[in-house]
Image 1 (cartoon, rainbow, N blue to C red):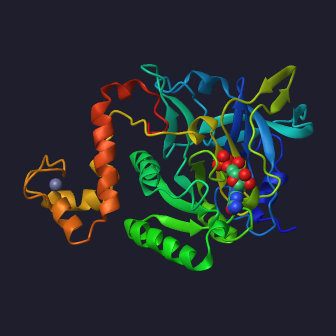
Image 2: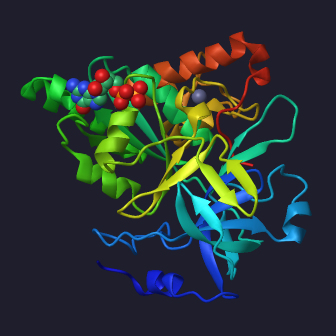
Image 3: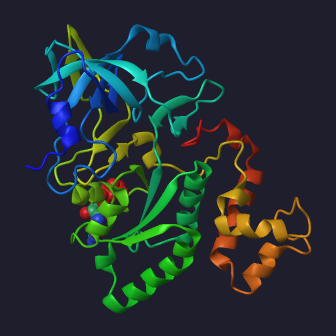
Length: 355
Ligand code: GDP
Ligand code: ZN
């Protein structure tokens, strides 16, 4: 088996040594840290070997970072010190122990805020949202796609659009449909992958879109998210409720976890986010979440233009010439109207936002 130099270092780490890792799961103050599967492509092609440590944070860390309710979160890059003890068990296997000495700076965080309480970080360093749609069963709906994309934009995440179930569309129609989505979304900077989880088609392209990222899959129920995860990495089950045993304690993991992928990178299993609907964080500026509107807006006559009925709106002019797609402008209108019609939306849980 191919093992990178970095992985070899982890496998040979002596007690007392400091190594870096990524927090995969948490529960009751105990953290499962992956010290080998870095979110880079270092462990490509079959050489996957991830060494996990069960860790408790060093005393000081527990009290630090008061503004955030979790000083150590799933997804955090941490520096851990390897312990001498080997008493810990994870999924019935013995694993090494360590103590988390330092949490490295977060680049982003997936937060779920409950009403007025402090935002709770659930996945730190999440950087990609994979929006899963099916071409059929249920039919592709561009407006629904835009709602998910807007949420990802609001959280400043990279977007990969997956069109699943392409096996359900006859060859000729399939190409036309996929080309249309690519023509709409690729120029906006979004990656589009057409796949069939069931027929195992297009999966390598999706794997490479995931490599090196911490990604969350979102999409309506029934579009094939679970099937896709299984196609990407057979045997990988997304589940919660793992039991971690350390010392005398048994700890059950909480509601979010990261799964290392053989090709590098991680998939976030965030049950709360799977069934996401458009619930905007209150700072949400819808126009900012549409790249093509964002780019055109400075040319509008009024600088507070909402791009609806104002005269001299550059966005509308761009829609007339075909530079901006009608379906996108329609989605923008609908989302804006929806938010205006529901001032109580602030009370809803925010599915993801940046802290
Ligand atoms: P989830 O709710 O998004 O996790 O969707 P599932 O993975 O549970 O899939 C929903 C249904 O779609 C199941 O009956 C799957 O067998 C089916 N399905 C998933 N992927 C494909 C695909 O690529 N082609 C076809 N024809 N069916 C699929
Ligand atoms: Zn305008």
